[in-house]
Every structure is written in C-alpha cells, then in structure tokens.
Image (cartoon, rainbow, N blue to C red; front, side, top):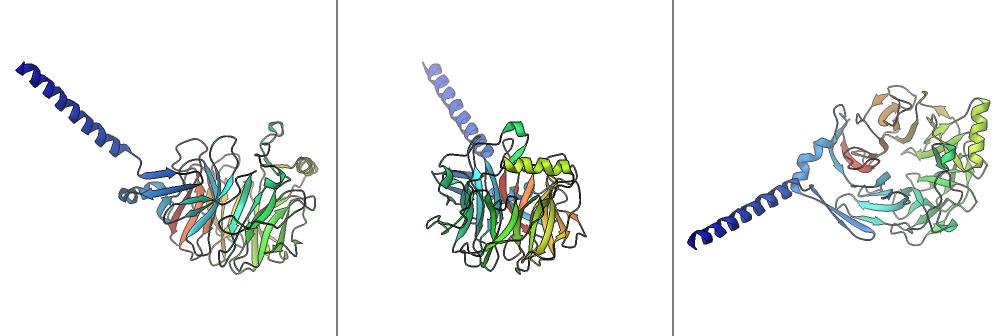
Length: 379
C-alpha cells in the first residue's frame, strides 16, 4: 500500500510539474499584444517587453525609421491620417472577405479604436478638419443602400469600382451630426482638408471624368481644378496651403483613351501607370513630378513642403511590391525610404513632423493583411 501511495504521489508530482512547464511555455509563446474586442471599440495594450520587439518591424536600409509600433492587428486597415493635435488617427478598415470598409478613430497612446461611420454601405477616404479637430469628413454610399455595394465585375479584369452613390459627408468626430457635402449622382470621394480648415480638395465624376475639385468646408463654392482626360485623384494640400499634390493617369493613344472611357461609363478604372503631379491651390502651374512606367500614388508633402513622400512599385512595375519614396517637388533627388518586400503605402507626417504613419503588409499573419504602423522620423 505504501508503494502504491508513493507511486500515486509521484505521478501527481509529475502532473503538477508538467502543468507548470506547459503554463510557462504558453506564457512565453503568447503574443506581446493583448487585444480586447468590443462591438465597435477595440483596446490595444502593450506589455513591457513589447519595446524589445520594436526594431524587428524596421528593415535594413530604413534609416529614417526609429521606434516603430504596430497599431492594428488583423484585417485590412489603410489610409490612416493624423488629427491636428497628433493624438489620434482616422482610418478605414474591414475584416473578412466580402466585408466593407468603415471609418474608425484610433487613440495612439491607448490604442483604443472606435467606429465613427454609420456601419452602412461602404466608406472611404477620411480626414480630420484642421486646425481644431472639430469635425471629420469621409465618403460613403449609405444613402444609396445600407448593404455593401456589389464588388467589381471580374470580366473587366482587375478594376477599382467607382460606386456612383459615393458622396462626401462631414460629421462631428464621434460620427454624430452628419452633413452631406456633395449630392450629385456619381463618384464623389478622396476628400482631404487644407491645414487651415478652409478648403476641401476631392475627386468627382460630376463632369463626366475623374477630376480634382475644391470646395469650402461647408460644401459651398465647388470649383474644378483639372480638365485633362484621365484619372485625377488622391489629392492633399501642402502645409502652407499654397500647393496641391495628387496622382494622375492621362491616356495617350486612341486605344488607351477608348479603354479608359469605356471603363468610366461602367463606373470603374483599371490599375494604371499613375504619376505624381503638383499644382498651385487654385489649379494653375501644374507640373509632373514622377515620370516612369510604375504605379505612383498616395503622395504627401514633407513638413517643409519642399519634398514629397509617396508609394510606388518602381522596382517592379508589374509587381505588387510597393515601397515609400521621397522626391523633391521639382522631380529631383529620388530616395527609397522602405525596403520591405511587400506593400508600404499611405504615408503621412505628424503635425509636428516628428513621426510618420503608414500602412503595410509587414508582420502580417494572414495573406492580404494590412496594418497601420507609426514610427519616429529621422532626417
């Protein structure tokens, strides 16, 4: 009996030790980011050892980056832009095949995320109203239907859908008191504020072609700035309000023009060799900045307004490896900024110029996953 009792005690001891070992291993393997999900709010908290992992997000050659943090974890998150006080980001995101983007606010320090769009239709291209952060703008299709609109027609190849029910809306930062700023049938989206809050620059199909327009912050005094056949979009003001930078594609051959027009009539455009352009805020003095066969997009001015940071697949124009580049406003001094073999895009400098936020596939756990990253900028 004594030997049986000893055997039982010995087996119990082995079980306890095994449990402790497994518990330690689990704790060691557990991710350093804790995510607590709620219906429309997600809180991200970081353990002390998260700091030890920050440098793994920065790749060799990325000499302008320091102390990088990942702010979202899973799904497709993109177009994150700073508030005027630099404490929050506004961005679009969805998780799951067939889901539609909605607009979210993210507190950079706490990691708390809150949905501020209606949750209906599909949304895109949000921005804070500078300089007081007292409003936000974004485009939404919710007035045209509460469900996700149909996806692209696969028979057209790889295309971007220009949902004709997209309109631009202004709201309080929590999403309340929504005001419609555009009301014509056809694509109205890609809106951003001037940094003094007086003007909005956006893309509209109201003329029959995709052109850059401006309007006052209340939606009045709409003015068309571009007239060339082709896609003009993704515009941002310079910090001093004197310039606008945007992406453009202008078909040259008759075949290219016919193909472009046929797609526009179907409310779609194809992936194309977009180039970066700049002009005065009134539409005059247009200049082409990039001139290559790649897809160049998501331009944003450096804090001094003398250079532009943008995304491009310059090293492989037919591939999906997009890196960030910097270039002088006169097209000189091209510099590669990111060296991750994947997607890096939608860069924006913080209002004080000390930080950069961008979207990337780096550190993704699933194919197609895109997250938001923030880092200190080193000149």
